[in-house]
Image (cartoon, rainbow, N blue to C red; front, side, top):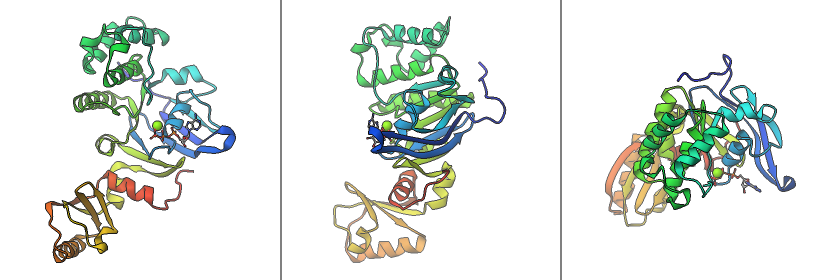
Length: 313
Ligand SMILES: Nc1ncnc2c1ncn2[C@@H]1O[C@H](COP(=O)(O)OP(=O)(O)OP(=O)(O)O)[C@@H](O)[C@H]1O
Ligand SMILES: [Mg+2]
């Protein structure tokens, strides 16, 4: 099925100076967020807990009103032209919300009806198949496990074949197998022309999937670039190893330690040699030593911990 495309040159999603306050202004969740997502892009929206990702998606979905600014989907304003904007979107919400009284297939048929899509049986079958739900089609929603419910939410979001797919942490609580099936399926839809907006705390997923990434911190965009440029622009060499010993103070200050795994950022190969010499001199036993490039997680932490200025405002 050909993708409906917006009038030429229009972005798939456009955020313009979006702000959002809660509790009469005492909580500022979004503070002048502006960026565009182009048709066909796989776009990542990253940020720590409370950064404002779900607030932005709720405004996009028309579930909550911006305190300022505007949002358009395929050229349709999400407030003034709500129905057209909503029809262009398939949204997988972060929270598991579902109607416990229906079977999986009924839930998908009802959702089709809501968007006025008739004769949707073949597509519903394809969704059930691709999301590993075929044997659960007749099961009641309340009998499903948490991960299964999330699969149904994904199917529900896609049931009217929206050109723009928005996934708010779709893989939270989802097992490895479904994660792979889900990404294969979403990547296929993206190749077929669907625009995808994804938020996730699994940064390796974002690194693998997203063409461009925006990072939110305290309601402001603090980085926005092609994924490859984010990685090559900042990232440097990383020394990774496992140890049970304490690090010498000189290295401890610049290391990230996760359990037994130590990662230390180096600017170049010479610095790596110095670090290894320091470890040897301190008699720190080192296992599984690797020297590699910094990944998106390293870049993310560097940006979040740094005093970056807002961009795109
Ligand atoms: N309904 C609400 N009432 C008051 N404050 C809210 C409400 N919803 C969100 N907030 C606040 O707005 C800020 C942004 O929250 P939001 O849910 O958008 O973050 P997030 O980036 O999606 O975080 P997470 O990664 O945890 O999902 C937080 O400070 C949050 O406490
Ligand atoms: Mg959220």
